[in-house]
Length: 246
Image (cartoon, rainbow, N blue to C red; front, side):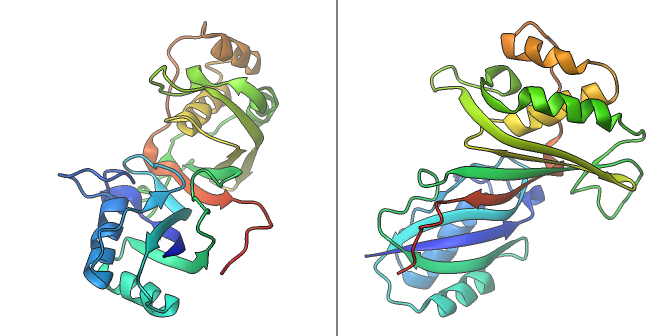
């Protein structure tokens, strides 16, 4: 048995998210169907993160187990040949059997793109606003969000699992008409990055104050806004530097 690791890039616009759904097109579903055609096995692919409908990825990581002896370069070419153009295997390698794309991950980095002017070419990949933001206040707010906190009020949760996460860094960078918000953390709850971006947006347009971050954590600040999905990209999944290939 072999354990195969994939690094994937995809445009999430026409997918109903990562996770398999029997009556909808998903990234996991497309890849599993492609692998079944190629190696005649019922493959279950494990993703590092379950991106929502409309969310994109530049560095999603997935792994699967197979008995196939197909060469990795041939497998990569074959997968890319039978899948649609909006999903692409960027890297492939064999890893130890105990590697798990989700549970072995130590952190993930997401980037959220905001445009401050109309752009028909980029409207599917950024949140287009017709006004600028006070980024100094947004940067001040990031310092209050970083660290280990209960992020349940920045997210959508089922109340069953732990909601404590550690945000390692948040960078707010504006160049010309574009603002990019990059968030790295050890784990993320459902819609958590979009909740963080939505709050930063409201600070940037002076609806909220940076100190209101404490009110979000305590659950006393209402009307939280979630940024739309299409501006969000899963950029990288981080693993121990000692991870070894076979």
